[in-house]
Image 1 (cartoon, rainbow, N blue to C red):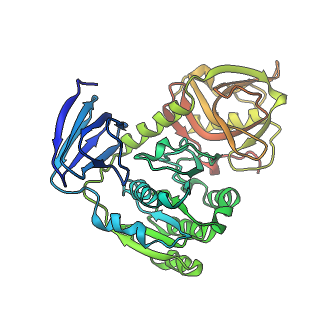
Image 2: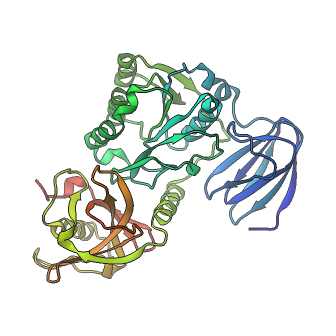
Image 3: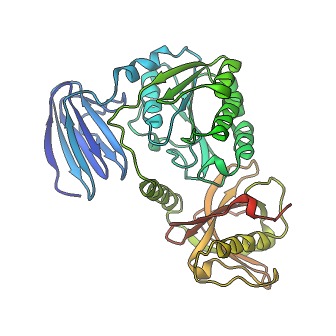
Length: 405
């Protein structure tokens, strides 16, 4: 971080701060997505995130900037008035789904809505954006009970996290809806819920997927950010009695390119596996599942080998050779890689992420990186291959796997 500098922000102006950076208000009063930080509270913008710090009165901020960060002083409120007015239009028992493309501002508008209504009581937040989630690691979805305002959703602690296995629902549409219905279906019967949907909305399959989620979650309101709600999706909204609100995407909402979104996910894996250690345990002590099935699999080595074969078929050179027969032991660890997997409790919730490295049939052992400290009884094997520096290397297309058919 560079040395802190003081920035004067006149009333009605906004300091747009792109991370990695931080700021504290040393005089005056400011607003960040409806949250009013107390004097001297540090407000942090993570890499590839942008925070609009709006001055409610003449204010002075002390700003510290990291490499690649930036600040811009705007002479207007970066949050549109229609956004600020919207939360008051929701009824008392609201269930609101936020719909929009990637980087359209869904999380920001959800956060603003949460902060505007949190004074009336706790709110449940369900994060279903498996590619760019805020309250859980990428490839998972979660819900949380929130009782106080905050300027960033990532500070909220998840009540439960569930594995999906992919960074977009397009890999497994029916599975995505099935898991949401199973684990979050009860939220359709309660009020004061906010749903953050993923940004895949273009094309008939995406529309069908969002319509299925609407029918599963039964929102009272659907907020569409610069997105048309028509056809099957509009029909689903009408079926559940959801009011549709169309709002614009502010020009100050930054768009990240694919590489920046990938880097953000990799930071998420690294955070979830922070302080992970190499563990080795008896293979038969663990019950294994693969990413698309709830039935235990009794030959997890073969599943891992199919992942390795898929890597070879797609010409990704990770430094290993695929054996000819299934009796040979697959080992991603020797190539400096691992299969992103999920340590589960008995109910299927995530206790922690794991990087599955390989098996030893002869010794009846399994090796993995994990930071879960307790015994591991259930492991769901995923579809994403990461390096041991948590870089995304490859995602396995489910249609390429013959295991379990």
